[in-house]
Image (tube, rainbow, N blue to C red; front, side, top):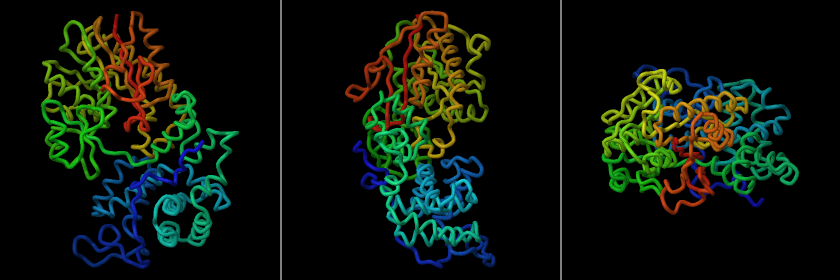
Length: 496
């Protein structure tokens, strides 16, 4: 299909790390000198700290069902890793997790046994070593020797086995392994894409369907999923100007959202604008779909807004700031108590009332009366297939069996939102998934079953002029490979 192989990454995407001498002791932290100034504890065989942190994060994801975006920052803080070392550990962690499916196929072939039969600690070390060999500029001898040293600490009896497997892996580059192991593009294009770009086949099939069967663009999407995503900030209206914020944080104004600022890196949570509540971290696609609800033309009163699934609070923060400018008030509903606290924290100082309740209780809860609200957002729980580049472990955890309960919940929430909005009012249905069952099917079924007239509003004019690839309407699907955003879906409905 002429698509770029996964090993050929965009210029500047790789993190280069020179070889480190074997036998070098780890520096400080958990595996070095006692931080309290006491005598040195026994030191394990030499493994450089960035690689060991990456291994710990990967192992926690697979062993404990941890989330990389939560466990890795804690490990980096605990071990005092910053700068280049932190960037290297991050690249190894996220890269290995993204490419796990293809790495496992290669390890299975190189080992002559199914990867699931390999002891889990050794298996994770081999994944880490294989990723270095095939997707980074780490010299082969350094990737092999450092991984064998790591295996010596986590599976001492398997060092010879690990050495043999990694040397076999190093006998081919990533294109060579794909050519050997992937099904034929002609006879099994979905299977080929799945192995070449390390996604489960069912997800590749869902993406291809959502893209109208265009396998070339499906390949571009899969490639984008395997890249490190940029960090986007949302400059809160009335509290921060995006151009001034970009200058303040050393970033650049966004391409589409009037509130977006692109960051080149760093720790966004530590920025003064974020800690002071003038901005928050939010993908540009999420900003666009929330803003679309706020700018949609509406006849009649416009002071009562509702976010029916508000956690963790990014869209509520943007809507709350917009409401403040327009004299409106936002009710933010979140069923999980800890996420409701996050919403309250994210909207502090804004005209937002947070309700810790189930959004489906519209009409039964006196604080959620029917036909009461002018604008309603339903950012429905979903598979999250649109943000796989940000949550690398998610593609391996999600299963097709997750869809029925999720789509049932989506329909129920959208139906509740249509009950909550007044006649003539607007409902925006949003998912961070392009799966057609979670998008078009859910919206069509909920609007058909709700029991009163519902009209689709063309969402395309509600997005910035000049945005490419918005389709034929009335709904909109954003894409990483087209717009640089998460794959957000938007449908806007007006109650008759």
